[in-house]
Image (tube, rainbow, N blue to C red; front, side):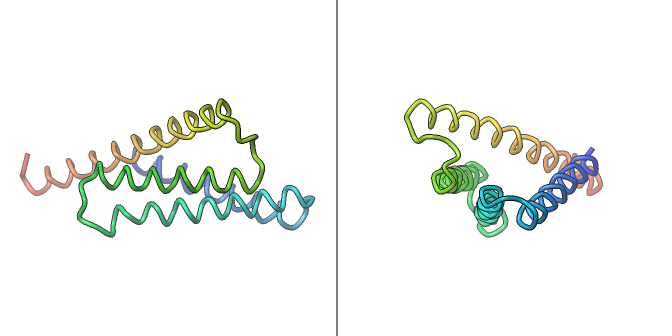
Length: 127
């Protein structure tokens, strides 16, 4: 299961990179701008994700820090790109959408890591 998820994520990353590169070369100015903004957003979220390996904080604390940084990055990049009007109802809708996607991805990673730890503990005879 872990390998399938890893392969899906790698495939999504490769296809996104192909889109970014081809969009930056062959598309109009609007697509170029959005390609750059998507790349910036991915880099910012990647930086925020580094909290998981860099500290000895509790998982909840790390998750809140990573979510907050990713969410603020999303809002910043969305504002720069004019991806949606910054009105309260729309921001709330986009925020709910972001949170649901984030939680789904977080849950997948949590499940995979938990299973990996259980298998490791089983091999070590701790369960």
